[in-house]
Image 1 (cartoon, rainbow, N blue to C red):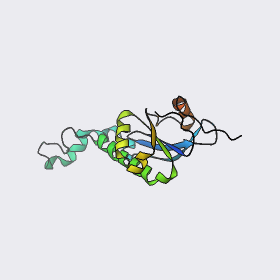
Image 2 (cartoon, rainbow, N blue to C red; image 1 turned 60 degrees about the horizontal axis):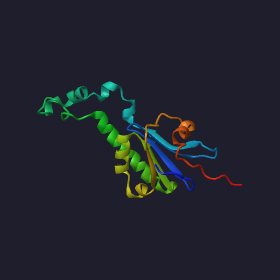
Image 3 (cartoon, rainbow, N blue to C red; image 1 turned 90 degrees about the vertical axis):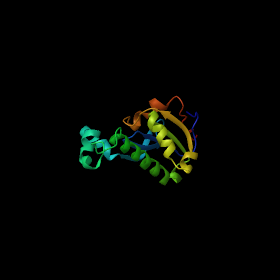
Image 4 (cartoon, rainbow, N blue to C red; image 1 turned 45 degrees about the vertical axis):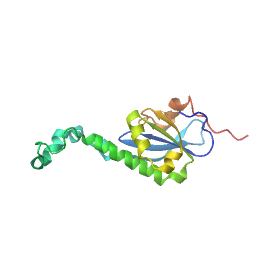
Length: 156
């Protein structure tokens, strides 16, 4: 994690395989506000929809293994992978709206997100935090970021 982020526009990308939001500091000291967010369609699937056995039975006739999906394939993992690429695309579309980028995601999602980002956004990364804060409200983010976040100086 990089210390002392304090000037310009910084976006924190808070994501996992199902949820995404970009937050930035707002006028109230120690507070963040969401500027962009969306969820994966798969985040709202019932658990039976992510069961590879039940989903695979649809294509039973075409498979030589007797299962419609390749052995070991995981519908949830594929959905999370696709979602990560959509997040990276959106971060790239908005690249002109921030000067610095901080990625906040669980380990596996952090690695995938960094790999999916284009050259422009990747060049603006100033820090990462391997933690799932997707369900943490904006008002509570500072509790998790206070060890390294340095708020912008207050004008006299």
